[in-house]
Length: 389
Image 1 (cartoon, one colour):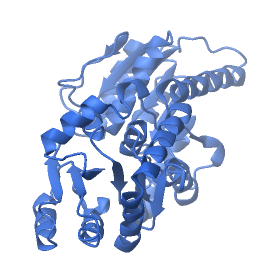
Image 2 (cartoon, one colour):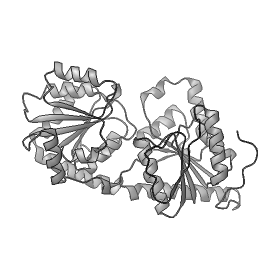
Image 3 (cartoon, helix red, strand yellow):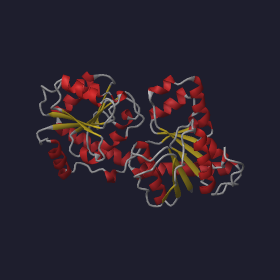
Image 4 (cartoon, one colour):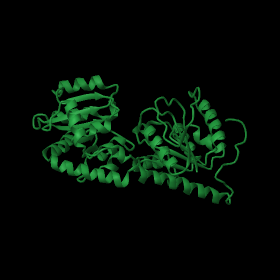
């Protein structure tokens, strides 16, 4: 198959990593693959066998993006368009106008902001998805949002979760652990919780700090390592100081070596208000860490309470503190939970396991398209007609 992946940009982020890994896996499986970013790709290392297409000179408006994608599709002539851009953008429409046989779009957010959308905005999203063969939800929670809120028919939706390359994430590497803890000034007597998240409101770092304040006297060995940056850093640092946590909570800012840093940790926490399917939880589980998360879409599908970690209600520092206290009181159990989490990721969310499901979906949809037109669709779509949209 000739597969075209379209994404807004190839800067650092979860969608960008998934697009890059999926494109590389498709090329390794023998497909012809191109990636078309709509904005910059500076610093992006293009995987072997993948053609990286130049972004347009300007992509500020939907019309500019549509004209660029029209030219891309006329040149590459894909069998499959897979968009990592919003369903209300024009990628789906352009793909259909260009005669692309199979159109897939990734749906990754279950955020409550969807509830604030106007009827017109919901209609635009639903109308956009109507032109796709399939919307790929990355969690059951996201599936429910698009089925119930946007009223997308179930047969138009498929759940394929996020994935991780387990080979890229070491599990309980003792040498890396010693190096990271020395860098952070922690000894083996300390218990380190990692929190990997942008310092933004919906990540609820304030709940983490309130929970930590309840534990500092009972567990003097506990430290909390906050990895990530954002607009609330100053505010959260002030809250930590006011709670007497300045020596126990460490704000590291943005880091490009998260898998290495996780090797120095003993547990992982994500107290968010909402997620789609958080890659950081997959990374933490792959690193062999027990996870404490909130009962939100994605996280509640990854964490298995009692086996790989704990799930707590949102906005509940007391429940969060209780889960942390249980882990601090029994670190041996935490090690066993972390190893169980690694097994779950390796069996259900590893790169080869999940990417094969994408390729099966593409092939299934392409066969269905051929049957629908009486076998008349070849591997190369017909020459698009007309002028650019």
